[in-house]
Length: 252
Image (cartoon, rainbow, N blue to C red; front, side, top):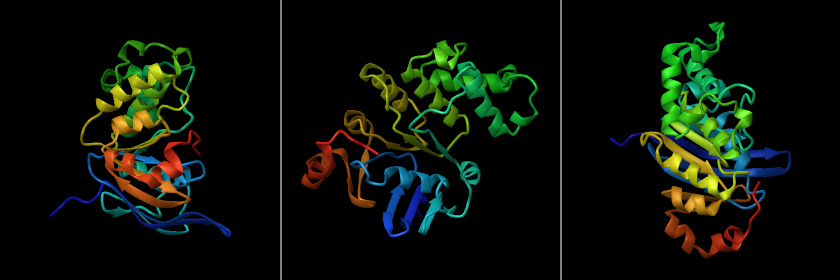
């Protein structure tokens, strides 16, 4: 018997009054997948991701994590089911150290963050796990730096480390290279390649170089509907994709 998809949507719809922004989206993210979601400006990518995470309720349809229906679960409940995410604009504690930012996430997973009277990184087991995550992403040397003093590309890596601190089975990365200079986006790609293979990763990204180098499968969303899905080679050869997206630079 095959394993359930790490993440799945069935006939997912979202309307705001007469405006439909997601129309019967069927989507599967397999365990350990390296998948990208792309689409032109206004395609509905952000709406789709917000429905996956519970930030926005669908009008109809279902969201499943590991085969379990989570459509009615709040964001916190989906995190407990193994869903992690980053945001297009990072949400870090900018005046805290890199290590403390990541340690807070680890402590939250252990259920001890609310009981701590000292910074989370003072606790040995939490500190060691947070340090291991920073090493995985190649930024352990910045552990003592304040987040605000880091280049933006490294700040994005810190945000990924925070998401990993929750030990997700599914990781949604919302434009991990947004605002990052091209030299630093290479570091992000290397970090993504180093992530545990068992984590299913979905990136939403407008940097096509990063998308085609990272993803094993790509889904193209246009006007709230899935236009096509396939391997990078299949998507690159699809004339419809070129017509609606690949020649454009905008994104939502």
